[in-house]
Image 1 (cartoon, rainbow, N blue to C red):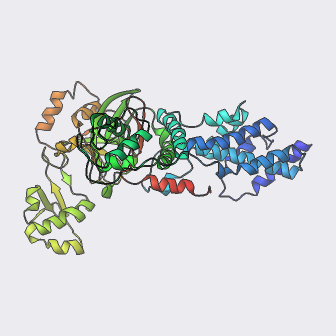
Image 2: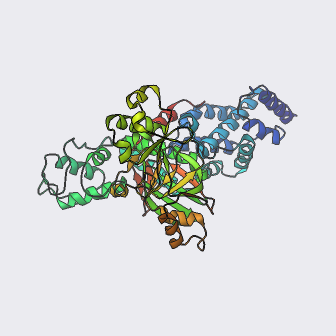
Image 3: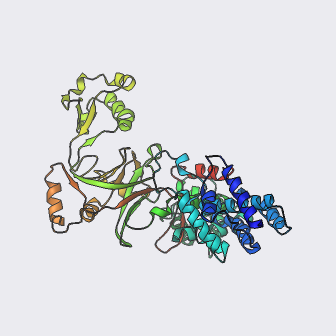
Length: 507
């Protein structure tokens, strides 16, 4: 009789919830005829333990008010009223449902930060209610909750890094390296002792102080190791980017790791199976097929003023010898001002002005200065060719933002370590290799046949033979070839927004 009264009380409370409330808890109880689920003190303790363990995932236990949970657990052992028991039931179940959502898919809705966001969303309340039932049935509730975190090597490396930097942050900041001109191996500088002290604080050993102001070989090698851990070019030269990384405090690294744990929860579902992953911050791309990396390439991504967006997409076709229609932003901010300053600019770039009917317009007939204020009713088209802005191959994607992958006529830029240089699209160093894999027909598209099609100069669109998910992914953390954690400079300053959202109260 008591259980029936409790079930009725639970049902009534759930029916009183607003229509906008998350339905996961209601669907869970509906599937069990509103029978209570928290009749075991061990299960409740497992929930409280799981909440406290969220700190190891970069999440905030305080979002779930552990003190209130403990008070409810204590009241449960003192024969409370049916009303109080129903309140405790829903408190515990709502908490577990929200914890599972955070640890698997993140606290923050990425669509609130990025309008283009289209990665796989969290499951619907029906699926989540089923997951919730499975966790509650588990013998070890905390372990079952932990098992819902992304099973990815980077996620585990970030958790280990979080514990490491939290311990360092508890000890305080490490020495700062003063600003100054670029330091090169063999030079002398009064900043060298500070550089040595900073690296010693970070765990380096064997840094001889016989010549305290000289940038000597042991110190150079230590800087190279540090640069490699930050995803920087390991050249031993202490420039602006290396100095920024050196002067990033342990507490700032904690925040960086928390932002990347959250970001990884958003995309974990898409980081499985066949995929072409463009690592925006790492300036490289990898194609994984059947669990094996079959292609890798350097890439050039958008400059900070014209960021490459994070997107989930697919290659819909290849275009050989593509023509380039100048996008609106580049037209407005780059081409029109340059054409206004230099009458020969369009000819030097092989750009042709065309009207809406496709007819060529004489550029000398256009008021370029006026176009900067009153608008531009024409298109600018660059004819195809290896010296064109898109190079010889374009990988057309399906997004509506005119973002795609392509070859380039400026191949020397791939020699740079920092390659945030484009206007948003992704330039690929090895496009021919990628094209052959995506065409997926070795007989019809041999290397010779592909080269012949490209050498012809004829613009041609070809459907891909292999459907591969494309992920344009931004992350300031990665694992290198040895499996070690890399913490990289935030080229688009995206971490700040994530951390602000993580700090906001849970809705």
